[in-house]
Amino acid sequence: MDITTVRAVLLDMDGTLVDSDASVERAWTTWSAEHGLDAAAVLALAHGSPSERTVRLLLPALDGAAAAAEAQRQLALQYDDLSDVAAARGAARLLAVLAARRLPWAVVTSADGRLAKARLGAAGIAPPLLVTVEDVARGKPDPEGYLLAAARLGVHPAACLVVEDSNPGIAAGRAAGMRTAALRGLDGDLRIADLGQLADLLGGSRDDR
Image (tube, rainbow, N blue to C red; front, side, top):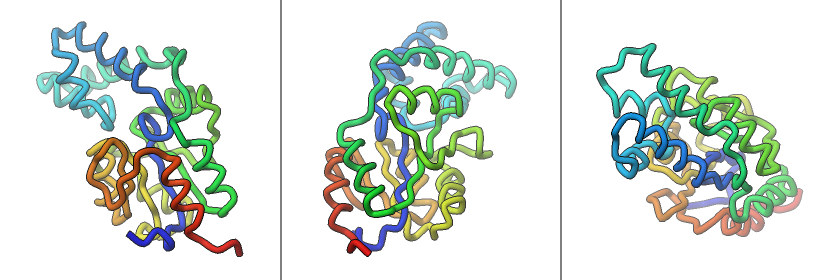
């Protein structure tokens, strides 16, 4: 992949820019127990997707209002669970490179605004643009969030790099016509071990003009 043509970086939040895995797992484990569901199976389905989409897949008999209420219950378990939330490995270095290279960036997350701001705040990260599940009609794997971020940054989708750690997120980036950098060994256009590796690649990708 030719990383020299990247003109904006769009980052997922949970598991990508912010290390919140423990909080996410605690919330879904508690929610799973409330419904007699296997937590491991629920977590495998939930990763990278909006809460309401996951609830609808797990509890298809629920009507719209009930599914929304269950999704809100699941989010409520996460709002104040911030004790071990931190910036992901390499995040500070990546953001420093983006600033030095004057590359615009945004966070595009399946979390709602309250949760996103709480976790980013706990991690000490203030994105110039935040797109949450509340800003779109359809969450990941739909490309709407990434397309909205590109439009707001004024960058063509083909010039954007999506950084993700889940299959729904990778699918959303690809559907948006963007290149993808994948964590956790997933199949993206570029595979990275952590954000520090991406910082190294981007740090040498443009001249200093």
